[in-house]
Image 1 (cartoon, rainbow, N blue to C red):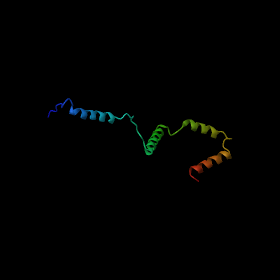
Image 2: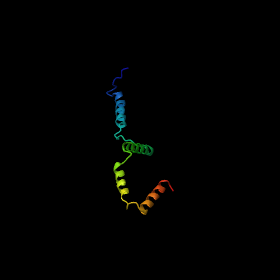
Image 3: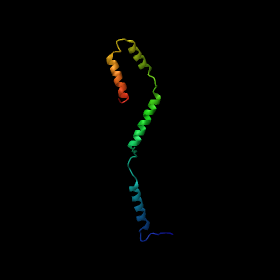
Image 4: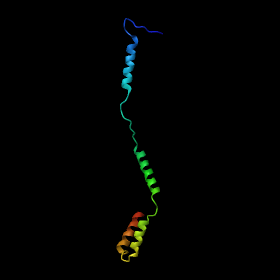
Length: 95
């Protein structure tokens, strides 16, 4: 089918102009973004904490050496230290 101009008017011009204007406004100029749920954030934190725990050695040799030196000193172990240790043990067990 051939559409010819009628009296200097192009019948397709209005249609083509309308399509161009619709395409012009359909483009979005917004930036991309990502939203994470609170549950996803908590899972990410838990995963990170588990990775740190895997990479951390179970035994801290520097702390063990420090405690051994303190225990060798006879004046270190007194009633205040014993009470503190006992309270911490009871707190750990929820007593």
